[in-house]
Length: 214
Ligand code: HEC
Ligand code: HEC
Image 1 (cartoon, rainbow, N blue to C red):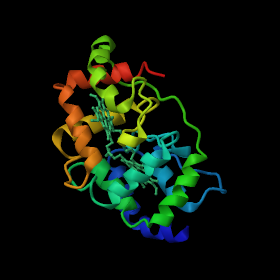
Image 2: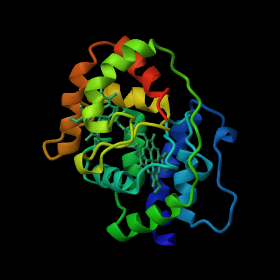
Image 3: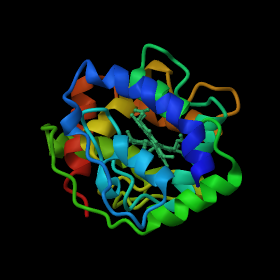
Image 4: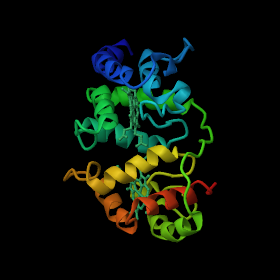
């Protein structure tokens, strides 16, 4: 475990310096529980105590995320599918923090993350959820009618996710910052799905509808 923390400490220090420009250090929640491995404490710096998210640095909540999806995304960051653009700091910092993780280290992180309990996110985006419900019909093909996700298609559940984080992802899928790597087949599928959302208002509306799903 110390091995992981050693590898990612340098990246985190750089990140922390950058973060101080926009926020007070006291806003970062650090895990106090001494029975958690050190590496998980480092994830908690950006993902919040027990993985409940840290909007200040843009780290989404991880508690409750499907383990197969977390694993895939850690591999995606490691393989430079995500987070390579310097001008998209949240992704860039995340990639720098995990790019040297080994497969074994990822497996051990998954075990720790599974011990965190999901928490209902607070809605931060408002939109027209009835228009959003019409738009969601096309998303349902991959993410499920109730936003429950579909492992076979690689599409994660959308219920219980932070809306501010999902909005950013929709925007970076739209701009091609996510999902454009030639080997990122899941990202490519999602970029096709994005064709249903033409405007920023469409994104807000569909997220307002997803917020009503349980
Ligand atoms: C320096 C801050 C930082 C650290 C440290 C960090 N992350 Fe992240 N992580 C982020 C940010 C910011 C994002 C969102 C990136 C984006 O917007 O594209 C993210 C995204 C993720 C995602 C993708 C979530 C999704 O829904 O696709 C996973 C999984 C993840 N982090 C796991 C981890 C784990 C596990 C660790 C510890 C080994 C860790 N992160 C350490 C900041 C960080
Ligand atoms: C053709 C299948 C498909 C369609 C249609 C689709 N998606 Fe996706 N979506 C995916 C896949 C696959 C991923 C995971 C991409 C990856 O592996 O990086 C994803 C990822 C996402 C994410 C990022 C989740 C995260 O944790 O980072 C959001 C948000 C999302 N989709 C919302 C939507 C919305 C809203 C719609 C409808 C407008 C939609 N998707 C339509 C397949 C699809």
